[in-house]
Image (cartoon, rainbow, N blue to C red):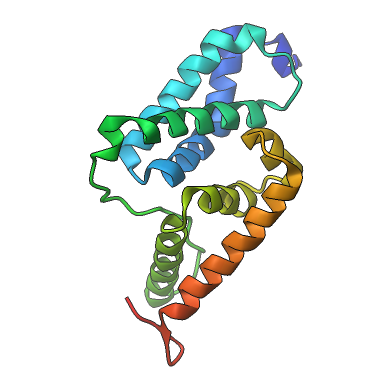
Length: 180
């Protein structure tokens, strides 16, 4: 069996798209808050990946490299005039737990949607560390490398993000029920 690096360029790209395509689109969505735009960015990521695949030096993992490309493209889009003038309508989607009853599924969906809305409402510098740490399951070091920010700043931002998220969640609770 051949290793990934022994695959042809096209085969490696196909493997990368299969392995990381959904994660890249989800990460892009956390920045843009738009499903279609996040899919477009994911496509751009893999175009750039294909163009630079032969130059990949293995100084990081493929995942970290692709996430870095994604984050940079997203930040470029956020700075663009076109993006700043778009109205957001999509919600951050999360995977719901598999449960027995339709009622339980609905409750899980609503809770995930509610928490997702609160995460999306965080400032980008806090949102990105929450998403990368909890949803993408990257380590502090991987996030630091990906965002090119000192490890101590990543830890501080994650701590602050948790605090802000907790305040947002507690601020909208009344008698144990979430106010929507």
